[in-house]
Image (cartoon, rainbow, N blue to C red; front, side, top):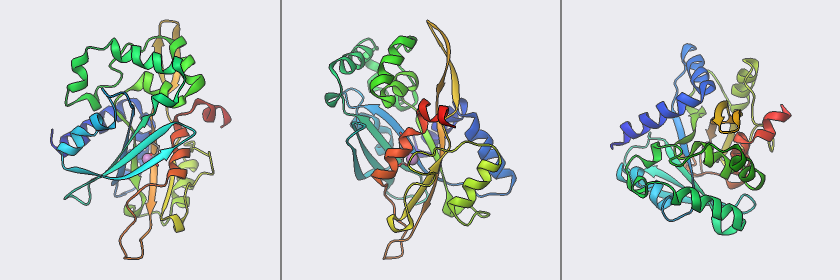
Length: 271
Ligand code: OOG
Ligand code: NI
């Protein structure tokens, strides 16, 4: 799959469960904004069948190369980011994975059972990254027990392989001077932002400032009945130039740690 097709399929799939992103995108576009994408994030488990080395394949085949790596000790996550080799305007790709060996035996076993029960051919497919939950995700009980230990694992159980978020490149916007102005505009339009660690994560000195909406709630029809579960969110990133004058290209682990929480139902209840 070429890069443009892959990215547009990820966008379509993301839009379908993230009505807020669709509306924010449309609202900015109506105002004559220039919307570019800073990065797209993907989540997975570090099981050999679906780890970062597997999920990165369609991106590497489309011309992406691995750049930075990031560690999230308390969330038991590891992540890598990718940049396109030749197209400087292509969005970066951020892929994280849950380090199963650091999780409880019970979580490890639940994830293994999920993956074992799948048709194993699905893991070889080029469009795995677009396949959502390739296992049966119909037990609220299973969801709730994952949630007790890892919000990330619980999200993966329901939503699986897909873009977890797209990110508006704030540098490219025409009508907003900084992230604070954009956040104020979004809040004035009644969008709820992720306030974990402050609404703006990162500083000009760190060369990256980020904010995000709280994930939309999506109705999931579990065997036990329908429940609203956070799906995906929209992120906003402003990059600053390095000493050589070029914009910083990487991510900031301390900020990312808080951005992950945009899908946490606990934050929804706070607001
Ligand atoms: C990724 C969170 C981190 C960033 O830009 O730092 C991130 C996720 O929620 O899967 O997107
Ligand atoms: Ni992000």
